[in-house]
Length: 115
Figure 1 (cartoon, one colour):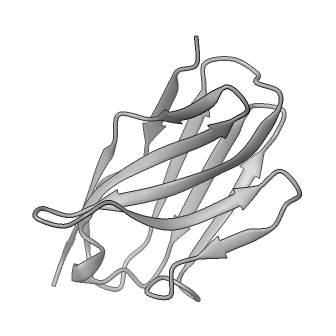
Figure 2 (tube, rainbow, N blue to C red; figure 1 turned 60 degrees about the horizontal axis):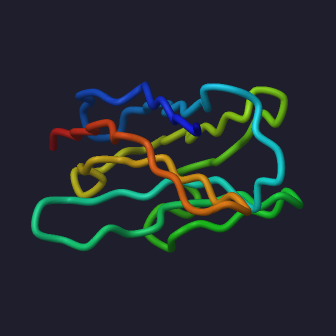
Figure 3 (cartoon, rainbow, N blue to C red; figure 1 turned 90 degrees about the vertical axis):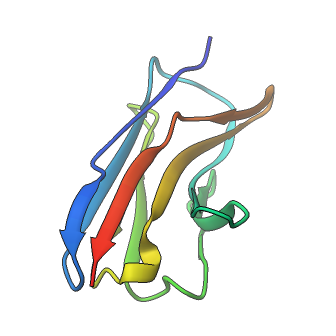
């Protein structure tokens, strides 16, 4: 069974940095893409960034130039380096795995940015 474990969230001041990690419980094949989503209170979940099986990356306009997504295929892991954090980045961040068998989500990790 696919299990995703996230880490790296926390409290940081505006302008600071955090690095989020997400790793699957075991090596998984036939992955279409992995990515990060976030959800703030009262708002819909939005896509922050993703990386496809071919290595292509996509970013939300609000984080472009500040966040960088990367992956480790051997570990079936994905990372999100977040720099120049803003108060509006505060949200629960979720790891997402798009697999041929379906869509899987991590439990979420809280990121809080103080202004």
